Length: 210
Image (cartoon, rainbow, N blue to C red; front, side, top):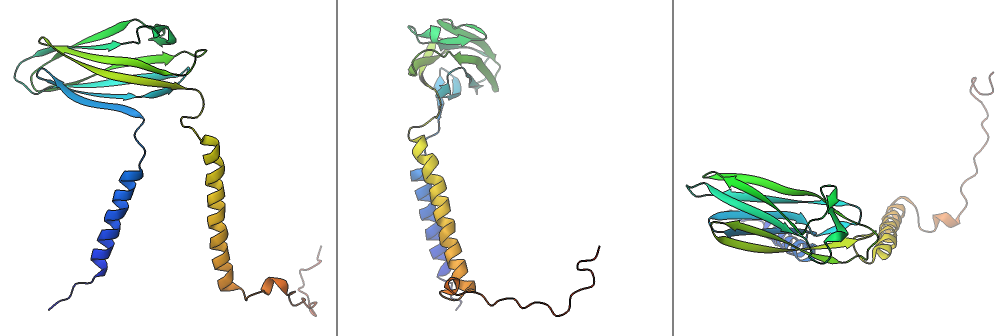
């Protein structure tokens, strides 16, 4: 009877544990990805949930009509009511809200977007409560969209990471060099002077030749 090697199951277990660890330690995506339905229309929203001041963000909306009838969908972007002056939209002042009507033929998928939303500088960094509203055939769905503004690094503790990462890399290479040098040199060889080089009795003809 053929015996299966126990190495393969061990490798599978190790790969499975590494996958679980990667999933557990993976940071959350810095973006909004929201899917749902409104009436007979399916929608998906892709948008960043943070931005630097003086930088622009774009919001992508994907609408899908799986039914047999043509549907009209209105996608509305609602700016923060009391702080919309902190943003510009399409190189102008940010309105209270802006909407895009879309006609969806049967079985079609349409993409629309809100572009060039820029966070002004000169105001404190904070989180703004945007929202996306979908309306079709008397149905309505509201998707909250918080946007955080930052100035400089995107996460706290950036200075500590900037110092810690090079230090860890240097330590790893020091350990690697230590193991490598132990293999190619005798113990305590660095304490003993090397054998002096004897002068050559016969030199090559090209030396000191002009």
